[in-house]
Length: 319
Image (cartoon, rainbow, N blue to C red):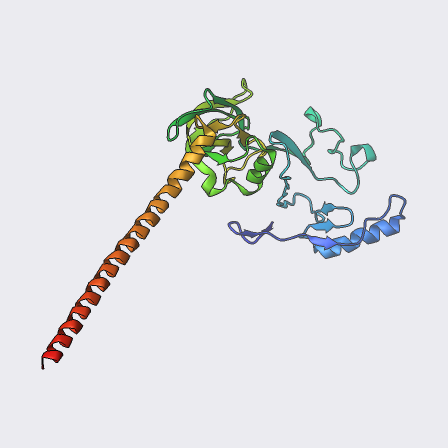
């Protein structure tokens, strides 16, 4: 960090040195030449990054000089979520006390051996981890348009709370299918497949005496004709950053169905096709009426024309 004034400072990147450090058996001349080159690039104020050795080197400092720097710790997305310690250490090129170098630098970080050139940073990696522990279903069949209660035991095994937790019931034709679970995991539930949703306000993290904090909630599944597979999905839009996203989907082990799945589906099909069939019959009947009315009128017209022709013939003969 470069200080412009007491109230103003700017971040200044380190100078990148591509040449590798001299080998352990290098001559003193090679070592001195290398560090002289680095010092020249640093211009007494900038840090240097030795790219080949992945080492950061601070500029040569005068007695009682203070330099501010920022250390960036990159955390992998797969890192385990817990509290851990990260040690930052500035080492002298002259070595530590065991090598006759920095008298306040020792190999150990423990207790009194924690030196003034060492600093331990405590990192608290926090995220919730929602787990569907159990699905409770007391009945698997009910009348059409009624509901079946589905109990869900939801746990948080992470180390911080989760808020606005959305839970949905998704309905598919197949029961407890791994391919459907994989598809939901990759693409989410189809909007047409979602039959019920509910939002849980918050679920706290477990304390030191608990392995998990859990709640039990119930969602009502609306029964339709036939037999359906039902899947419980937590956080379907993946809006909550969790320690693991692989435990948010669980299938109901058995199908949920109407009392007579086959006949109920057949009845629905008949009901759907009955109305169009009646409309067709009425249309045909109406066309028949129109036909017969038209035919009767044509016969009447022909009869009148015949009468007029006969009358005209009689009048002509009299003349």
